[in-house]
Amino acid sequence: MDREELTARTERFLRALYEDGAPLAELLRGADDVDFSWIGAERKECFDGPESLVRWWDREKKDESRPHLAVTDLVMDAQAAGESAAAVLAAWRLAGDRSTRRQRGTFVYRLRAGRWLLAHVHLSQPWALVWGDERFPVTAARMNGEYLAAARQDETPPLPAQVPAKQRRVLRRLRQGLTYKEIGEVLGISPRTVRYYVSELIHRFHVENKAQLLAASRGLDEIADEEKEETP
Image 1 (tube, rainbow, N blue to C red):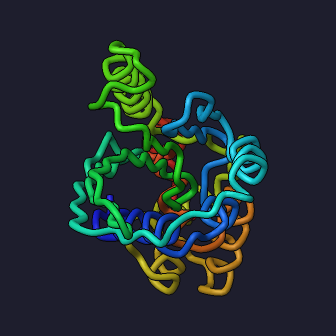
Image 2: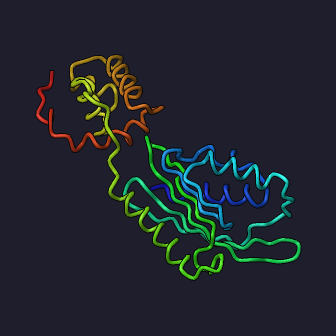
């Protein structure tokens, strides 16, 4: 988990939202559209996808004149939840023309194909009594806890079916840190052929580069077949 990256992303999100008034659709471009969820401060502000949230936000808040707010006293703590999920707990103050109020939030990120995607935002201050419901703080905390617990049990991404043996051999050496030239020498093939196999693997795993391939293919380490393959 890259703590500095995730805390920096969280700070950019908060400052763009409150200080710049940036469109929410723009802020959610890096969100996980598979598992994304949002809990806000208003009664109906609970969503299980970025598209439905943005539609509501644009409809309800497009005419809202938001005062200029400054995010001050920002403190963040990034916590890992297994290998594929992390949470950033943030506390800050919103300073406006007339008042300063305390705020807190939870940002959950999921690792998919080597990229950290924003998967959950909780800005409803669960430590306070919200909507007059004294049970809300406990319920919200339990929801966040269950989400992270589920993430710990879902750390191995689905693997492409039937990865060819030659590509699997190249990938195993690549994961050992060997260069294309070194892999070619071990397997008796040219570096150009190694590069071709890597490009095929990148396409097969639906990732963009070698770094993302190494992250997305970590589950191959647990596959028993071909562990004793013969080197050609």
